Image (cartoon, one colour):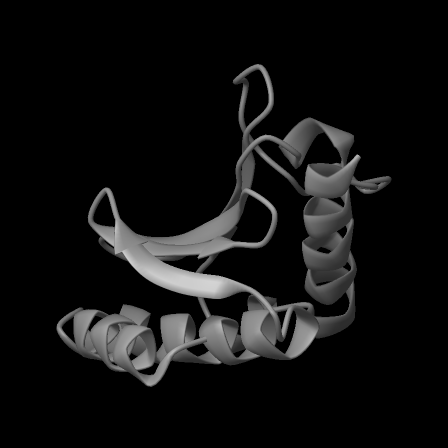
Length: 119
């Protein structure tokens, strides 16, 4: 990731309400650890992560953030049915508090989503 995009995304998230900005910063760190080669940028008004295509985004809402998986959402291993959405391929999970972030599971999903782009 370029320093320029880090600053752009960090500044964008910093403009969110404190409650969701803190969640987004935590999730952003997790994404960068799980996918160190991904590119981050602002698209459609929110942070987007790409690696061989669109992987995920962080969307801000009034009292939560959503980790959205683009073209791979329906293909992710989700035996507990945590992912939400009814689109053809996109799925998301809502995060309301820091303890909602399941680091191991989300990291696995991120890696699966990036691999799906290479398939």
